[in-house]
Image (cartoon, rainbow, N blue to C red; front, side):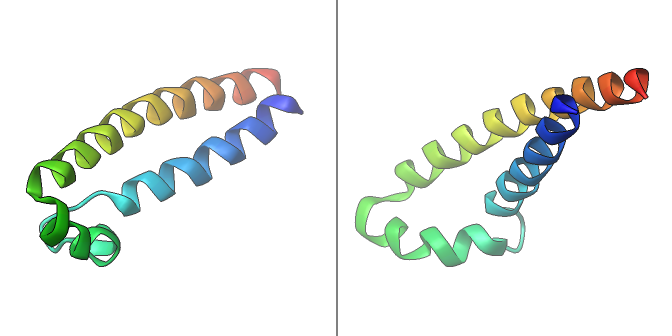
Length: 74
């Protein structure tokens, strides 16, 4: 039961982190941090992308571990 709830929370977090990353079309991240790049500089935007990239890896690993755990328990 707890693993299922954690799986849902991690899934929503993973979706959010992926949507916030800047891609080729600059997606949702460009709409949120686009103005900040002009004020602060592009170095800050690269730092945010690095943090989002690391968060994606951590959440993806948690997602797979929780998925295997839920499948094993059911």
